[in-house]
Length: 107
Image: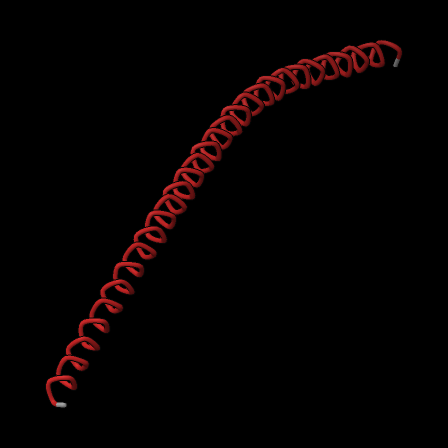
């Protein structure tokens, strides 16, 4: 009886070890699959984020360039208006002077 019990115990132990090995192998395969999927997912997300960052930087650079161009145009326009204003002030002064001279002649 003890030989049979020993054989049964050894058989059970071997069967248990075999089941554990299969479970471990299945788990390792599952883990490897999940790891690959997660790696691909995060690599894809990282690439997408890098692309988005590059686009945002390009848009920002474009906006800066547009802002500088608009600023330069406004500066030129401001200078023209300032010159025109100065010219008109000079004309007004000349007219006032001429008017005063004419008025003095009539007095």
